[in-house]
Each structure stands twice: as structure tokens, then as C-alpha cells.
Image (cartoon, rainbow, N blue to C red; front, side, top):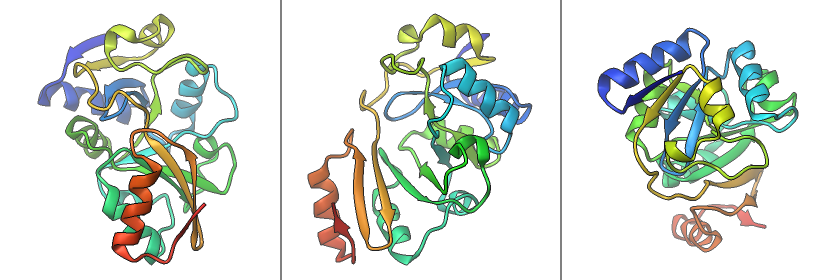
Length: 210
């Protein structure tokens, strides 16, 4: 494991690790993430093993809407809704465009997000536009908001750690699912339900919040 303070060179080196099938820990706007290439089933399986996770899908972070459109289906309403919150701490579950068998555990949907973190966005960009965005913790244990809080099993099991200090929100992202004209909150986190409701009303979107 290699620990580097965040810098342009460190992000570049971390992206090389991702492109080579490795695992990296990196800071986001919410928690420290465990990242790899979401299109590399071997790398994703390694991330699952490290977290002690078998059948819970993991999210994908993107550097842009264009990158996320490679893996998720955005209709007009979903595109406008996501554009209103991204970059930000809201993960949105949408129909998947690619098989993504390991990332989605064979399910029909995928959670995607553009984080409000220049480190995470740049790492995703240099890694090819997409990055697994699961939290860098053992399943069932608290997330890490600082590299000092990383579980030893995670820290010793990855190829590189980017130290960016404390995360801004120190709260996991909110997760919602868009299904046609309905939107359901699956997990409330950094973005409140009231904030989502207000934004839908302000935009005049044809979405019903459940």
C-alpha cells in the first residue's frame, strides 16, 4: 500500500493504478471511497472481497454526465433532475445501460453520481471517466471521513491511498431511485428530503416524491 498526500501527481499515479486493475482509497465530498474500474470485473470482485460484501450493488462516480450516460439510462426528466443536483452528494439509481454484472450484482439498475469533489472528479477523469464509488469501509462498519479512520483491513488491502484530509460533509450521500415519474428516497444522507422536494417543485418536474 502506498500513501500519498493529494496532489496532481498523486491523482495521476492513482489513476494509473485504477487503469491497471488496482484499488485506491480516495477522498470525496461525503466519505472516503474505495475505487476501481467499474468495467473491470476482477477489480470489482476484489473490492467486494475487501469489504466483505457479496450481493449489495456499488455506485459509480463519473466526471461528467456524458461519462455516466455510458452506464445509465437518463430520460429527459432524470437528466434535468440529476443536472440540478450534480456535482453533489446525491446518488441516483437508474436503469443500467451496460451489463455491469459485478457492480450491480446482476440487477437491472445502477447508482450513479458526480461528486462535489475535484479530487474524485479528476481521479475519475484520468481513470477513463468512471470510478467505483463505494465507501472505504468493511461492510457493517462506520465509513471513514479521514484516512486515520480507515479500517486496517482496508488500508492494507488496497494499492494506494490518497490523503485529502477530512471530508467536507462527513455524511454519506443521499440515495434516490427514479422509476418513470416517481422518485423514492432509499437512504437520506447529506441531501435532505425537503431539499429534494423543493428542487423538484422549483424545476416544475413531473416527478412524484414517495
